[in-house]
Length: 270
Image (cartoon, rainbow, N blue to C red):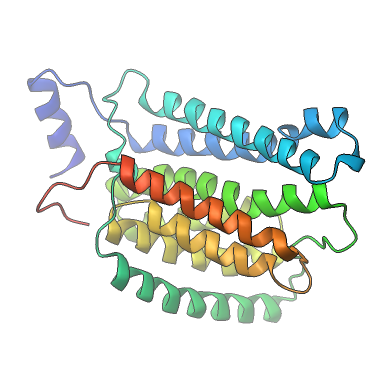
């Protein structure tokens, strides 16, 4: 059913309209910009008031601060998206996923291919840079903050804003062949690192495929978090033992979301 016909039916029966693609893109950008801003400012109260000697306690307080302001960023973004509109978040991937095992297998295989092709193009063009911070010489509090940001906050915020809201909005209006590469390119560019522009754009297309096929943002969050977990375990990152509890926190949030979110209606297309 086209968006125009659906809008006419909703108007005829007295339902408020769904959000259009332009509003969806703007809401996603609001979420993403606030997330990038809050990832820095959310930890400031603990960073300014709690000494480094508190170690893990300071790291926990910084992480809690980032988590709180990230939730606020999502709330603001959804208010932009759904103001004077039908408040149904299921079209943006807030429902239980389907076809999870097969889609995860396909997503992993396609993801490896996307990274290989993207890195080949990156090397040919001589692009440099990395999104993986070197944490070896950092205090435990700094390590905890960055590992929490990478494994828990980033997968949730980026998948909800980019694949959940932006891609879903573009896909509903222009189709997958436009929505996936455009949202993937904007996501990659938002990292401001030349070397990840092509790998992350292609990876974003794969994550858009996962979002579309499962009908949910949850599998993409899990795959995104798994990738960042593996990156945090590398010799360069030096996340150490902190990676395990953060991965468990991510898993716990996914389990709670799965439990709380509604199932997709029978017969719904992925």
